[in-house]
Length: 220
Image 1 (tube, rainbow, N blue to C red):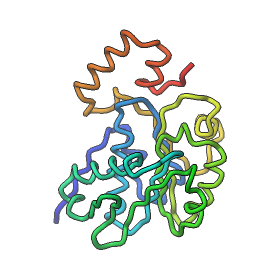
Image 2 (tube, rainbow, N blue to C red; image 1 turned 135 degrees about the vertical axis):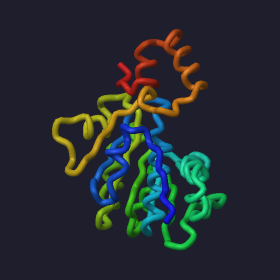
Image 3 (tube, rainbow, N blue to C red; image 1 turned 30 degrees about the vertical axis):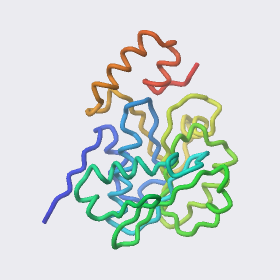
């Protein structure tokens, strides 16, 4: 029997390893270079290979497939020979070759009516969630209603008045919420190129902006 080895930053294992349906919200927040998006893309593909699910990848604005989470998912699949063997990655689609799992990509601002009419979404991946306003969340969340469905939220904290900040940086969290704050220092595969850029930014950038970009701090 072949065993699949999944490598994640250790800090993400308690958040992403439990089976689908364990949580309602899995929230990954932090600065640049932390492997949040890649890890989410890879784990979604793994869960989709284990069981048939429909995965909605969304953000507030998406005018084309190039502006979507598509590239992140495609790269994650291509990084693993087994995932690459079980998924078909087309020009504008990603789907499992046999079990029915499929990815859907849509922006919330101009597609909310079509998203609300989608059936049986098992997993919603919300990218750049800091920029998604309350009105869009109000429409999206009730749409993700399949049994054991989940919402995965990725963001870099910036504004304390945003919906994600007020909801997930709060004493009273939504039921079944799992949160992790992860930064470059928690990523074992943080590249030399990014480290070079980070050190330069630390020297020349406004400290508050540096803390927001690289350390996942609110921009204050």
